[in-house]
Length: 428
Image 1 (cartoon, helix red, strand yellow):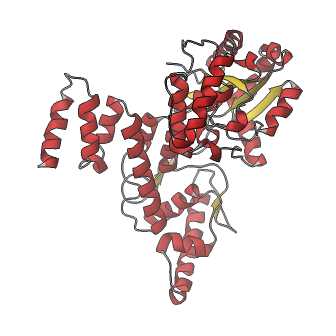
Image 2: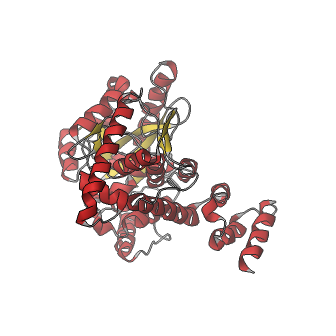
């Protein structure tokens, strides 16, 4: 299902419809979602965004990435090979005052082009290269919705979650690798012209041309849709299973897995004292010195381990941090939830994060992943996703999750017998 649907006001820019949407948007502060007068696919996005942001008033400006990170994404993303094609095919949209944007799968805008006056207006709301327009950053918008649902999206005026974006209209379409995984997003933004059928047809034709080019040319394979972008020189750091972790074909000790997980989760990094507290909790001064020696020794050993591996990961100092975008499976699972991809999140987080670890920082991450995944399942899971979740050890005693199974499993599913027997055991 796409974010485009039949509605009494089939034109989302219709003034009467926009007045109704604006009235419904005012109620979002109280978490009231009016599905009567607003397109259902928009209200579905609003509900996702209320879980992420609680109120539209907190969503004002997008998160941004560093200029060197943006440059790296631009160099490695396969869309770079077809930019001239995109500019040619979408030139008619620029001629009527629209701008085009291309993002990666995380929602970071890599390129923004088109009518200069509209680009200037868009920059005022943070719609510019290097900014994050995922639903987790800016709420409902066509780019964010397209990445969350994997479908074409049109968002008009007051349908945007953030009040700051209500003067804009946008359509977006996912761009897919030949294998089917999403590699990024193509967007048209500006006046109400951006949500017309003609604009949508232009996007579809351009996306088709891009994907046909990708299908007949060789570029680094996207492994699958679990990686943030199509080009990745290093695999996920696996920390969700067993003792310690793995980096590709290399085994990580429990302590090294803890450090990598903490540095991946907290991208700004830690100094030695902060990292000691994350690993060993608050320490009295007489014990802190010994722990600092331990931390520095482990960092030194981990740095040597990474330097001698064939994966390009460098551990930097002052503060301790990772030099590039690498991610653990735990962080990738949360990122998948932010994109609305519950299936990938369940695949990425098959068990507790470093279950043998008692480090306070790891315990906090473990609890966050478990609670966030459970809430997403209870709110949005389909029967197959729910059954996958019920196979996790954490769900073995979860009465609410098993009750949900009886509500949503098909009437003649043999799994209902398992759910019934489990509930009888749990409640008696």
